Length: 224
Length: 240
Image (cartoon, rainbow over all chains, first blue to last red; front, side, top):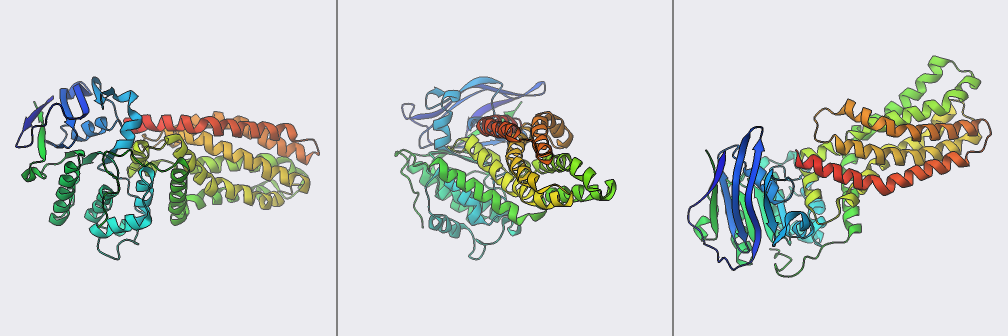
């Protein structure tokens, strides 16, 4: 069983500010045991939350539930004040989820991959996508199939979507996996910028992220 | 450096359904063009099965033209079934399905684009090759256009029905047998009307009734299968 505890530094958000996600008593079972139980929290606009917890504590499961990809066994989830089931449409318009498997096809080039992923959610030109990719990849990698890229470079291709998306809420599952120090610095910078614009994010990670800038707070899923 | 294209307060500027449909279609076609064996295997299977029949049954025109409609149709059905595996499994494995399910676009429309891409690389080549194979099986020339027409309508229905089965079994690792058991009963009406149309044409009988029924089946599948497939995919993603 796991509970949700709050720790670390971070901005205490104004309760009157816009509440995007509100979770009440979320419980998920794996077999007879609860993966986590009675989990309640809220995500406000302009807030970056880092989820931490040991392997298997349910971080990815929780993130998928918050995106509406999976359902909790018990508890209720509200999106913008409405129950999730009735708010799916607005949720899909306002959310960006980059999962552990980020939807990068290994036969396609980085450009072709992002052309599909970005064009489903926003009207952006090929130039925009190229510009976003050149920030993160060395020149000459844009036209190679993703199977020849390293794990870190593939991660960068997926993260380049952060520059293109109009989504208000970013859900990033282990974005630091295989990422080097420069990439990590870049990601923290994007998170801070996003928060300053009034966006919010839920990020699962074992390492502290942008906490120094004061925008992020940490939730820990604790095994009991 | 590109600025974030939207201000967070402005309503999202979501592309139209048509551009999403085309994005999915062109992506899937690109992938299949780069992985040739994926779409070549069912096609080669189709050709091999049919070319074996004159060798095994003997070259008498009477017998061959009698069995030709059934042989070509059964081979087309099995070849389509072989190709169903590639419809969603790779996309589930690399996370693309999650992204499609989370995008603001209707999943059923994107499913339709994927099925169309699947049909263009697995169904259409069968249809285009069928006159050649008909010739091999001594199919009389008046039955040739019926063969092409019935296979054209039939493979559309087979791809759409198969997509439902592929979506229902997407989260299972080795779903080959289960997929066949699920999909085959639904394939039977298409097989009966399709091969019967060609057989009637061989005997010089009218074929309008069978072809109309095939067209009706294809249209019903076109209207309903994308929704059923999308719903099945959402369940598959949730339990993944």
